[in-house]
Every structure is written in structure tokens, then in C-alpha cells.
Length: 192
Image (tube, rainbow, N blue to C red; front, side, top):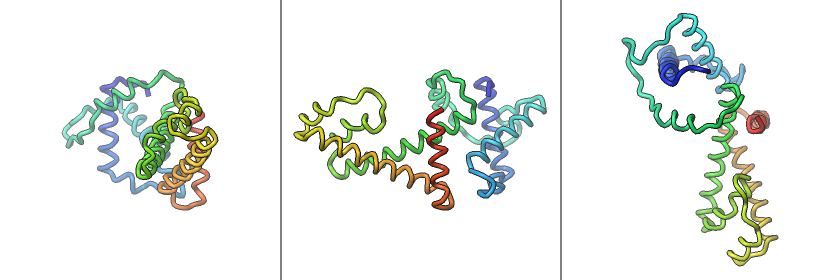
């Protein structure tokens, strides 16, 4: 939101302190929208109120300090590419990436339990589209398989990954009907 690192840390500390102290999470109402939207709105309101007061509450300020580990977050954010995304859009995108990463980790665990660790490691670029996937021919030769069999494996894994993503999303909503809406939000967040 354009604050310095120190000011952003102070605001974050104060926001979570207020969230806990005032038990604001109890005001979240699923009928009124998503929980992450509730958090973003609460944060925006908090920042506006702090700005209106013309001061930034420094860590401590006579209140119990909640230990938050900023160093690793700053390291992650310092590596983020420059972009024109709003903080809300960036938050939604990070949520979508987390859902995908968690689902991919579950798929990887399934394959490791089936003894397919090496094959998964070689084929994962076809699932993520990150990096340059090696040719199917080279992998088929390495594993004594055919390109058609590998393509079928990737196709099955993509379907399983889709199922795992839906399952992951299902844990965050109240009904099955909401899964498609959340999946749509996830896809939109990834496109931006």
C-alpha cells in the first residue's frame, strides 16, 4: 500500500492485535462474502482509520506485543517482481498460488507413496508449465516407456490435480455449490 517496511510492519502488528483484541473474526459472515474479502476489507478500514488519526502505532505502544516474524516475509516480498497489481489482486493471486502449491504437493506425495518419485520429478514441468519441459522422448527412453504412455500419465495427473484443487477449495467453503465460484475466482486471480 506504499508504506515503508517499518510502517507496514507496525500496521500489520497493530492490525492483528486489533483483530484479536476486538474479536473481529466473529463478525465474519459467510452469507456476506468470502473470509479473505472480509480480512482485506477489515485491513483497508484499519489502515484508513490509522491514516486519519495521523499517526502510526509503533510496535508495543503500551500493549502486549504479538511476535510476528517479518524477516522471511520481507525476503519473499523483496523477490516479488515489480507489477501493477493492486494489493487486493496480489492477495487473491497469492491465495490461488497457495491452493495450487498445496494441491501439487499432495499429488507429489501420492506419487511418492506409489514409488513414482523419479517419474513425477521428471514430468512435473508438464503439470506446472514452469520452465521448459524436457521432451517426452527422452523421458520415455529413460524410464523404458513410450511417449504415448507418458502423455497419458500426465493427462491422468492433471485430472487428479484438478480434483485435489477442488478438494482443497471445498475445505474453505460451506457448500459444494460454492466450489465452482471459488474455482472461477482462483482462475481469475491466476490470469491477472
